[in-house]
Amino acid sequence: MDSLIVSKVFLIDVQALICVMFWEGLASSLIIFTSKDHVKFFRGEQLLEKAITFRLIRSLGYFLLLYRGIFPDLVSSTLANVLLLLAFYLDAHVLLQTMKLNSEKLKRYGRLVFVMFSLLYVVADLFFAKANIRVVIASLGILMTFAPVVFQCMFGKKSRNLYRSFLWPYLLLIITTVPRAIVGITNKEYTLLETDVLQSMFYGFLLLKAFFCTLFLFVIFLSKSANEIEDLARDPLTGLNNRKSFNEQATEVFKRRQRTQGLFGVFFLDIDLFKNINDQWGHDKGDEILVAVADALQCSVDVKDICCRHGGDEFIICTTIDNVKIGEKIGKRLQEKIHNIDLVPGHRITSSIGFAYGVPKESECFADYITKADEAMYLSKRSGRDRLTVIRMEEIF
Image (cartoon, rainbow, N blue to C red):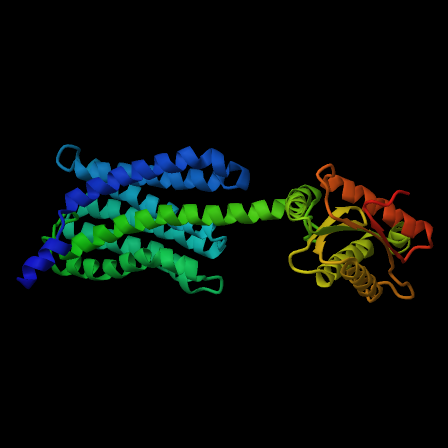
């Protein structure tokens, strides 16, 4: 009874598994190919081309294996297994590149393993032509190709739980190659297409690895795409929202306050005499100050408030407040934080700030608040700089 259960669960016809591997390679290549246009913008086109290439090479290798007896052994065995070794080498290379583990040592090692085991396989087929030797060389080739890469990805310094959750089929495959090679050494009648529990597990893990490899590729690309979208929405120097992303987010907040009839405010901040700082201490020092001011902004406002580098040395903050006193406290806190920036010896960093607030009306738009806050900021400039000017939207200059 137990042996029957084991045979039902683990004993699968090897040729059937190879056939599934062949179609899986074609299907996953087609899926990746159709997705190329969607990830091209996220700098992943070359990596996807490599992923498609090794899957097609792998499918060709399995196709030739399936037709042993129809094609000559030189094609259906020797060429087929060299193609599979090449596909596994490219698979490991794509794995490294996907995780940005650009180790030149591992790449050189992978090329050496591919060339060495390909030559071994050709020599063994030409001079020995023994089935069990083919099993041993193929098993050790897979072991040597994947083991260093997989262990680096799963247990290296840059390893993450996400990687481990997708790479365990690789680990199972590596483990299975060892007893498979031992059986190949001890059993002279053992062939690549032998159907037993060990072979079923080996090809089953190959199939599982192929599935998880494709799934992992898309998960990584989705993650990277989301990160790059986030990066595109940020000012590259300060990390604050750029104008486009700020306008989109702040407009949504503005519309919500219109519906709920709550107070809405916009700060417009300009660093005083910033051109003089650039001229006297250089643009690198100016960049340091811009970054420090951006940090001061983020430390001074609530997590739900939206900060933006509007351009040059101008910054905008969108905020929701319960009363004007809260807005004034935020403005004063901003000034104090900027006063504490000590990057230029003998020079105190100051800012002119305008704050426009009100209950948004149906006839108003978010841009109206920016315009008013800008006008209030210029009032601070004309009043002697290092000032906060607060106005209600109903006020007229």
